[in-house]
Length: 352
Image 1 (cartoon, rainbow, N blue to C red):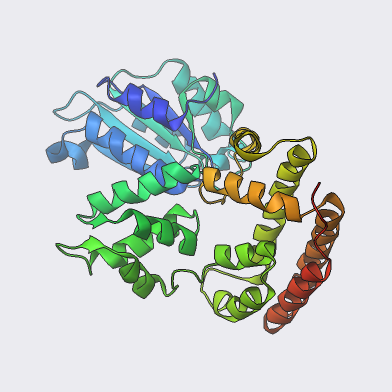
Image 2: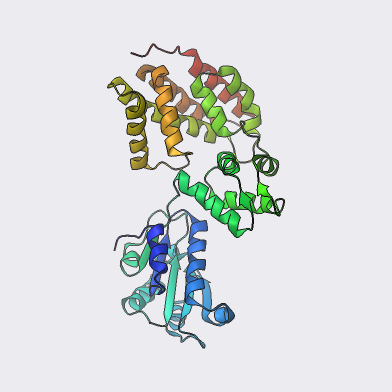
């Protein structure tokens, strides 16, 4: 059975009847935990939850223990919920995995079994997917990441201004765990107040206009002075290192290459931006900010970045990446300074 999207999972859950068994996999553990909470809220009365909810790690669950848990009857309730994490361990613990598969072929109507695979696991278990309601927890696209931040802020009892959401995501990135940690901090400061950009700056320690994204934009704008001025402050941020900056720049250069290809074929204005945006939606790259905004930036940069200039910059970026991975932390600023100067040493070519 094909995996369900997260939106489909929540829509189906609103029908009021949980599936007999769920299998959650993918890199976003925060979203998995939220989904588990939603199932618990639906399936169990809060006053009886401690009697009808068991959670275990697959690394420590014996075959007979799993079998007993799955067929045990609920106490004064319609259902009980069994949560098993780290099910990727069953690739080595084959007896326990077989018990799970045998149970899934004839699940108990009184049990909701939730199987959760860790984020580090490379791919889903095909047999578990086939016998369960499987959900893929992929990284959220930019717009949904911002909506998620707003939603979690409301759950924490605070409202957050749209520009503050944008700065938080720009400063922290798309890591939901890190975003949640920073939201928790700022919520303590924003009792009865709307979270503002200045509050985010104070908590995260990153001023607006001084993010890793601002450094990348300065490089692609050809603003050497700004890129070099920003570099020390950006590198000093807790979630930033040289490899991350080079990766961000390399991704953007590839994006500008996509825009330049269309530009050379005669696309201009809205047609150019729309074509780049549709390519972004098809590829769904992780970690980028707003796709529409990125499509506009890539399209705006395209005239100044000829194919030969892009190829040279990509080669220089790759060399910087290799140098960063073989140098000491103290040498990052030097490698990136050289990269900025090398990239800007190649003159812009007149666009046709």
